[in-house]
Structures are given as C-alpha cells and as structure tokens.
Length: 439
Ligand code: AMO
Image (cartoon, rainbow, N blue to C red):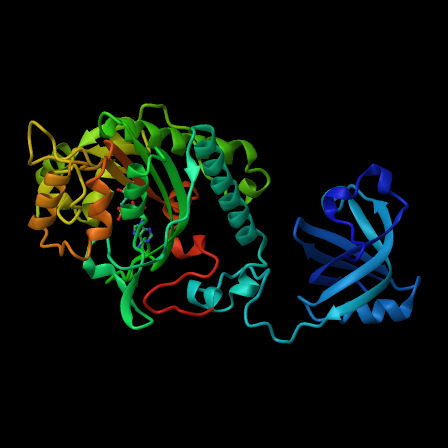
C-alpha cells in the first residue's frame, strides 16, 4: 500500500509535518501567485495550496491538471482556521496518477443538478459527489443496525437461493431464466425458504439479500432488484408478535441513523423524529372507510391504490402528527395471492396481515403464516397453484411445522422515506428497472 494520510489523521500535532495525501482534483482556483486546489478523498475534501514562487514548474503543472484526475500530493501541513478541516497542505511535489478526460460527461460539483437519467448513466461520476456518498454511508449504518438488532434478538442470518423453481408472490412479477435444460426464476422473496427453515427448527432467521420483481409499471417506488430484509420466527401467538418485532427493528434503525449519521446527515437535513412505540395500528377497514368517504383511493377488489396509500399516510400525519403506522387486518380478498397468510379463526374473511407504512409509502408487509397443512393446501387450491411445483415447500409442513410468522422490509424504501427522497433509484448504487440494465 502507498503511504497515504487521510483527513481524519491530520490534527494539531501534524502542523509542520511532511505527509502525502491522495485523491481526485475537484476544483482549482488559480489566483496567479497562489492556487487553491480542492482535492477529494473518501473522507471528504481538503485544500492543497500551491505557491508559485516556491516552485514555478510545479505550480504550472498542478493548476493545469484536468478536474477529476487522480493525484498524490506531497507537502507540509499548515494550520489555517480559514480553511475547511482547519489545515492546508502546502504542495512540494505531486504525481499525476490518472488523468481525467475532458469534458466530463457529468459535473461533480456543478450547482445545476443533472437529471436522474444522466446521473445514473454516469454513475461512477455521480457517486463521487459528497452528498451521494453520504447517502451510501447512511445506508451502511442502516444495514449494520439491522444486523445488530437481529443478532441481539437471537436471529440467525441465513442465505436462501435466488435461483428458484417457484414464485411466492404471484406469477406476474416473476423473471424467468433458462437454467440448464429447464426453466427457473429469480427469487421474488425468500418467503418459501424462510418458512421451510421454521420446520427445520431454526426458530428465528433473518436474511438481507436481493429480491427480484418484473414490475409492470415504472414508478418512483419500484425497482426490479431490491434488497429485501426478511425475518421469520416460530412459536408466535399472532401477527401482533410480528408487528412488535418489526416496529422495534425500525425504531432501532432510526436511532442508529440519528446517533451515528453525522456528518453524512448534515448533507441530508431531514426531520428525524423517533416514533413512539407501539406504533399506531389502523385497520384496513378503517382506511378503506376513510377513503370511501373521500370518494377516491380504493380499487375494485376492496383494497387501496397508490393514491389511497398516500392519502392514508397524509390522514395519519394530519390527525396524529405521526409518520409511521401499521395498517392491520388485511381482508382475505385483498391479500388474495398471498396463499400462505393465516386467516382469522373467528372471521375467515380477514387475515392478521399488516403493512407498515410511512407517510404513504409501504415499507413492510408481513403477518402470521398458515402452518396447518390441510388449511394451507386448501388456500393454495383457491389460488389455483400447482401442488407439484410447490411439493418441496409443502413437504416441510407434513413432518412437524411450528406456528410462525415474519415480514419482508424493502431496504431502499426505508431509506427513501427516512431521507425523503422522491425516486427510489437514488438509494441504489446501480439500479435496475424496465429501462435500465447498465451500468
Ligand atoms: P411484499 O411483496 O409486500 O411482501 O414485499 C415486501 C416489501 O418489499 C418491498 N418491495 C419493493 N421495493 C422496491 N421495489 C419493488 N419492486 C418492491 N417490491 C416489494 C416493499 C414491500 O413492503 N414475502 C412477503 C413478505 C413477508 O410476508 O414476509 C413479501 O415479499 O417495501
């Protein structure tokens, strides 16, 4: 490794010391006799100062390096309160390691924002922006907090196959794939496998992994590849146990972002209000009743459409000043394709299924599963599912399956809502959608 000093290692004791720093030349301000060069590295930006009379040749060279080129600079640290980080590096020599072409296809510090498509087409440059990097640092905090939460609650991290023979969330959004001599699919969810693991006695599992959906429509909340945060646990009494776990997870993540998010959060100034637990529970029936009163937001199956979900989020915010809430007791007719959902013993028209919403965006869905073989197969029959295709799953229910439940949380959706981002694609390094397969 080259001996390189990062910003955080420079302090009062560094003053007068000779060090080498490395990074991308972000901007050059040439005042004639002195030039201020703003360089960027993974911890942020720092200033290199070149003084013409010290070394006219070096001065000429460094001020003419194209922006975004990679260089190392050797120099002496000088304290300067006026400068970002409180120090500048007085350049003594530098090496141009990789010269950037001109013009840049996307400006890294331009004040005028490029449209999202141009940004995503040139993502390697877009990701050089401080604010964009900050988002991925916050995402890292979020995912680490999730792992910490699950481990702390006795969950085992697992990895289930992403090349599968059967879908769990309905055929319409399956991506088919040629698999040697047969047809396979990309997994829409680890659903069937996390349930099989309950029969194996793992009792509490979680997975943070990609899930794939061939979504028909192009929206700001759907992508074809997202990170699904899945949990499943056994010996629950009802969906309430699952909601309890889910809200504690979300709270834990928000707290971690609040506590560890600085300085990235300074670039994402959001109103992070920790919700009070337990979160508000509103039944699906109450939501549909409210929307019917407005005369909009419902769909012909008795569910809510996207506008309805947004209106419910607004309603809860206006009535109670709360961002997060559960929509509970989804009707059997609405969960429909979710053949594995347990129906209420006293009212088979209802399930214990829930969604966790935040300001009108669905972040999580989950609930108690049907673990009784005869009831499960009956529900599969109603959904016209091919038993043979699901035999690998059904088998696990014939030899001892505890009551269980769990949820799936969209990682990008949670980040999107916490940072108040309009388009979910911003939360993914290299997003996939109907129109985008590269970069
Ligand atoms: P569901 O299909 O509701 O449930 O998905 C769970 C969560 O995943 C996120 N999500 C998406 N995020 C971005 N783009 C998409 N195309 C997309 N599709 C889904 C959402 C959603 O709430 N097996 C069940 C979960 C369970 O019951 O355990 C399932 O997959 O945030």
